[in-house]
Every structure is written in C-alpha cells, then in structure tokens.
Amino acid sequence: MLKKVVNLALLLAVASTAVSAEELTGTLKKIKDTGVVTIGFRDSSLPFSYLDENQKPVGYAVDICLKVVDELKEKLQVPSLQTKFNPVTSASRIPLIANGTVDMECGSTFNTVERQNQVAFANTYFLTANRFVSKKSSNLNTIADLAGQTVVSTSGTANIQELSMTNVARKLGIKIVAANDHAEAFLMLDTGRASAFVMDDILLASLVAGSRNPSDYSISSEAFSAPQPYAIMIRRGDQQFKGFVNEATAKLYQSTQMQEIYNKWFNQPIPPRGLNLGVQLSPALAKAFKTPSDSADTASYLP
Image (cartoon, rainbow, N blue to C red; front, side, top):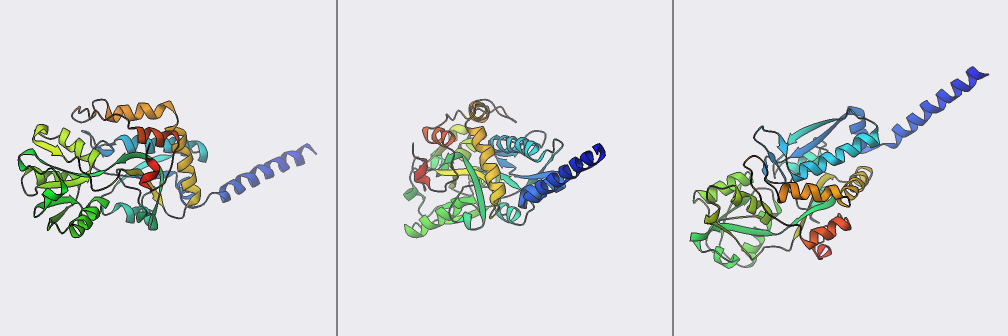
C-alpha cells in the first residue's frame, strides 16, 4: 500500500511538472528550454547601453534588464540561467527582436505607436525629447536655423523620421545624412561634415560630456517632439512574456533599488572615463516609476 502511495505521489509530481511546462509559451518557454536569455545591447548609447573599457556591455538599461533576468531565474526555477549579449544597431534591433534572435532589447529605444505594429514594449524606464546639438560657433539655436544645413541623425531611429517630417512640413531644405550609430553621427558633427546632430537629448548630453571640448557644444532648447518613453523592447503578440517583464519592472521601479540604479548612471562617475552626467530624476519619470506604464502616449507621462 505504501509503495502505491509513493508511486501515486511521484506520478502527481511528474504530472504537475508537465502541466507547468505546458503552461509556458513563447519566449518564456524558449528561455526555459534553452537555459539562455539573449539581451540585445547598443555599443555606444551611453549611459543606457554601451561597451566599457573591457568591451563589456554596461549601462542603465542593461542593469534593468539584468534585474529582469534575476526574476526569470526565480520564475523558471533555473538558477544557472545564462545571459547572452547580442549587439544590435538602430537598423537591426527591431528585426532581431521580431525573428527571435534577441529576447529583450535593452538600449535607448522609443516606445511609439508605429513601432507597436512590429514589436512590443515593457514599462517605461526613461523619458527624453528629440533635440539637436551643434557647435556654439555655428550659432544654430532653433530648428528654423537648420534651414539649408547638413544635419545628421542615426539610421533607423524615430529621430531621423521626425527630422525628415519637420524638414518637409516646414520646407527647411535640410540635407539629411544618416549615420550608422550615434558615435559616427557625433564624429561627423565634430569634424565639420555636419552642422548639427539630431537625437534624444540625454544621448546628446552624454556625447557632449565625453567629447574633447564639451564647452564647444550647445544642445537646443527647442525640441522636435514632446518627451518620449524609452522601454525594454520585446516580441509582439507574446502576452505571457510581456506580462512577466511588466511585472518584474514594476516591482523594480517601485523599490528603493530603482533610485540606486538611476543615481549610479546619472549622478555618479561612470565608466570608462568617469563622466558624471548630473541629470536629476524628473517629476515625469518619478511619476512613471510610481505608477509604471507601457503607454506610448507622451501626454500620459506629464507630472
């Protein structure tokens, strides 16, 4: 009799495990089955996602994604879960998410309504606006001042799309050049091949801070857009994984750990050059942490 009870208990345990495994779908099942989660990172989107002096992916967004990985280990009961880093660019990040090469893209990607037709986004972790940087000697202060100028932006970004739409709508006659990445775009500005560089204001601030002569540059006060949300990008239609990532990020954002992560990357010296961006937590972002949201509606983030 005892043997039958033991056998029944074993059968129930196996059945329970099987049911649990069957409940996993999409990305969660893939990660569970392979024992690997793949994070897409950018190599020059400081301080969100970039390579340090040891060519290791680091940054604010990377830290957030690694916290999600910790939650994955617990949920999937795979403490030995491996993290694989896969480099992505502005042009490749959406295709690599869509085809399953990358599970989470952790960089500096806008959550937009247009992009939601191809991919999905988790809760917002930063808010930024689209502005331009130029050399002070150029006396380019407003968007109207860019008329007839050569202006660079990064290929595959919402920024270059907004620049193009503004150029057409306002008939500015701007010659728009697409760079492969942010570092190349800033180099074009630095070497005089472009008069201005259009990008997210926080990325422009980090590039200026890391330049040879930060005082030579000025970031426009006028913006091409309202503040827009950055978020982890994931596959579209995978509601189970999206729900998990939203739950994990909400837990993090509402904890004291989030303030520590924010201060680490925006209010302390960061690798590789010990730059301190000195960017305080905005009221809008504080609101987004208190009440996490994955909305692409910029108005919803107003404090």
